[in-house]
Amino acid sequence: MTSIEAIILAIIEGITEYLPISSTGHMIIASSLMKIAGDDFTKLFTIVIQLGAILSVLVLYWKRFFQSLDFYFKLLVAFIPAVILGLFLNDVIDELLESPLVVAISLILGGIILLKVDDWFKSNEVYDETNPDAHTKISYLTALKIGFFQCIAMIPGTSRSGSTIVGGMTQKLNRKTAAEFSFFLAVPTMFGATSKKLYDYYQAGFELSSDQINYLIIGNVVAFIVALLAIKSFIDYLSKRGFKIFGYYRIILGMALLLIHFFIYPLTTI
Image: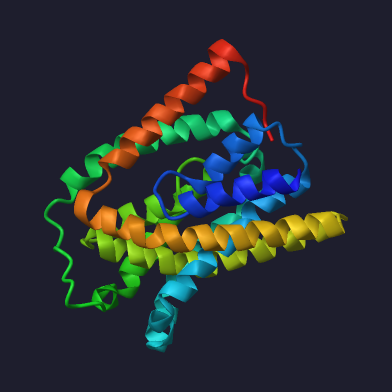
């Protein structure tokens, strides 16, 4: 990996982290197309730089994180399913992270779902712009159910934000409230995933070189800045227009990847 490749991946992460199109899937595709070496550091990098993008939530929504202990307890409840399932399926997840084909299929299937989501949940309560605390209506049971939906995103190409937003909408939340709770839930999730990935990396006997540390720093900073710009734009678009454009994008990209793989040249694993 080079500095330029690290910056490109970080820009992709920052743009896609909060869109329902899968940031990890896009980084796997980009890594494959750029022929980045499929080593353990590349896998570590694609996870750790997501933390930079997630930290943008703390900056933009910092007031929400100083409201009440109840807010943190709900995030903890929603976070638990991913912790348990992640510990049991760690090796399987690592294998899936190597496959652009898994990403392509997940993109298509997820895209089909997004084309229908707006119609399925049309009756959900309309977001009240005068009530910025609408997310407090989320119960502990609702938080837990959203947490189970988040586990679906362990399949690359599925999208963590997409899974949790749709999960929230199945619980009668409107798009904006579901999206914001998804963003909040990303904070403990990515802190946990980053810590676990770094621990596993060192437990496997690897050490980070000075260049690799620089790549991680650059990647996190770039992802943070880009995500700051992307979050508000996504929320505004989602609340007004819905998911259809993201569904079409996922399907087109997934089909293009399959065509490239089977008829032009095989996409390599990372």
